[in-house]
Image (cartoon, rainbow, N blue to C red; front, side, top):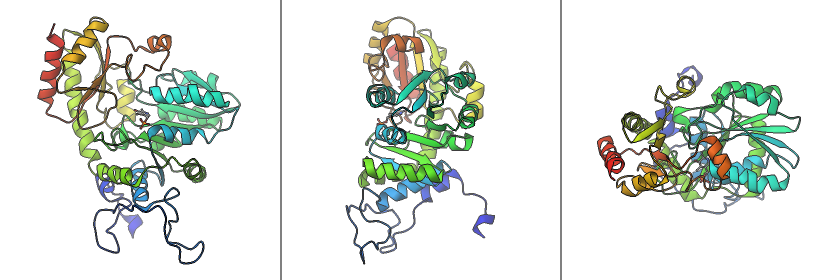
Length: 387
Ligand SMILES: *Cc1c(COP(=O)(O)O)cnc(C)c1O
């Protein structure tokens, strides 16, 4: 009977998937199971949980729900996005090769370049906005294609379906860091990817009060290996943070809609502003890949990049004059943040590489929150026109 029913909608699953009233008390919210270990009735016989590193009921509810939102059966909640990436790369062995996009989260690049490269994993970094570029970069030892789309901070879009086709023809697994879109606006597994990574620190939790990550797959074999690695490496998410993420998922859809509506208005305002050189936002027709973005994503998200007219001093001045926007790293929370990638989030990227991908001194990255958009626009306008 159930399989004859229409699949439940995103908003419904965000509130109910993986959750039911607590059988012992009727509590409708999944309890915080703050127990490191679980009683066994006979050696090896338990109710599905034996030790909280390998599995915890609160964490499992979050993992089940977030995986469901990505159209998958398996999720592994981690203590950070970085340890999620670390766990994925541990699928590989020394000598294996990874092709990654050249404009990704600075911490992911640092992890690859300064940690895994030293352990014998090989990396090629490539502009993958042209799917044709991938074919020639694949080697017999290539095991993983690492995509982040839209990229951070320049919001370049990669064609997940086309790139996955090229990768799969050579038996290469595809990972998409989907942090910027959340499952509400982009579902990489449906486009052909094998694994999805989120820094749940960002939109999934959405309230800037925890650090977390999740790795999601619908592939049984990958799930078995990832489950093994999550437990063996031990970078799992705490029960309390799993609880917060589970709670936050319930409002993901309404938050994403509000982020996007505000971002689009701010992008249009900035694009028309005399002190602004250029705005990068996938929802603007001026974005070079607006059509691909519209095809691949169901919305354009809450992140935008803006190049000011002027120099580093202009950027410093604007950043010190904003009042509602907080000058801070990170993104995806309900409050608006602004930052300077060259000095802040992307400081660990080599300056020459930074310039090559377009992160210059007048570039600001904005994470648009869900405050009243008129207040946000007034704040930006005041900061831009002040001398
Ligand atoms: C923040 C972020 C990460 C890293 O996640 P942490 O939770 O900070 O470890 C990875 N990818 C993207 C796109 C991010 O924004």
